[in-house]
Image 1 (cartoon, helix red, strand yellow):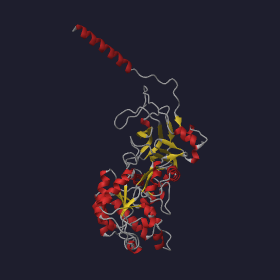
Image 2 (tube, rainbow, N blue to C red):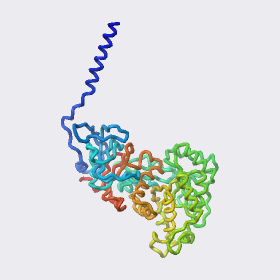
Image 3 (tube, one colour):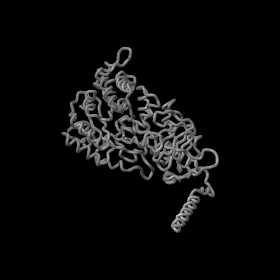
Image 4 (tube, rainbow, N blue to C red):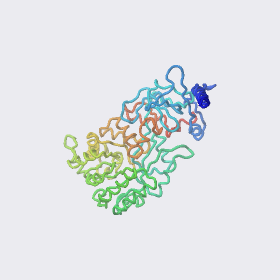
Length: 482
């Protein structure tokens, strides 16, 4: 008994000695490196620059006797390593919250680990530092409605290098989906590409007549509707696109029925996929609302004819929506449906342009103002809007969707709401709201820096100075060799 007690006391002594050694502070590095500013990443070729910045060195945040030396996450945990810091900027984080003056974003690997005021954070010695130089730090812009974005070169040159870090393709033939597997190539990374694959529609339905039958995933009956969703899900789509389009200017194309659409929605939701519905006619909203779709693409109106739209505007220039349109829009809001109006594509619509000739000021024409009026009513009534401009159609711009931003502002959105539409809300409708769209702890590190303040002037969005995608600094062509 006494022998056992002696052994126990000796074991406790060894545990105590081990604990004392484990609690000793690690020695400081013998020769700490200086903080590495972006300007020191000199190079002679784009490839060399991207190799140098693809995996920034991790930096341990060491506690010092005085002053802020590390930052705590929202969960209260000390952040132990930071590989990149974007600092000295005005932060608009995409959440709709108050902007942060003199802010910073800390990144480790490809994740954001902290966002806050620079005074609360000491930059680690060997972190890569991006000096925003008083500009605005924002989430990477997301275009939530594009086409023809499967080519990795398109996503890099036409989108990423202009500050658009993600695009969401709303319809592409199944055999072309493989292009989305490529996230970059020798020249560097590309914008993220999310996809719907082929769009679910009725046999001989839209958009096959306009864009080719390969764009259609034609279904007939509830069983085929369910199998179509399961097939698309197995191919890795990020959301389901359905078309409820009887045609334009007197056409009478076949449309799937409400039972088939219900089967699409229930199967999609069972597999954690949103359903995004192409709807340009308010009559088709009945089916969409009944089936429970998540997102409406385009602006649902009673008719696209100039006579119908002009009748919505009185002599004083005020817009009066038909009661049946107002009622359905309010139901959309009650059901939590997000609207992606794609206003820019209306400005480029050849039928609309032909109908209002010889007018040249399309934006201020009564027809387009009526379309804006629908979006304004939806917004003013509390609806959520995501930004997408329907790139891929003739006349619609690639890159930073500045024209779409201006049009949303014309429809009543404030600048900070426009940014929300192009970041958080766009990420949500693309099925990636948990990882993208805002500058928050734990989100993927996609962000941009622009010169100026877009809350004062949205044109500042056209002056991108730095782009970070997935934690990697993307050098613009003019920065190579500096």
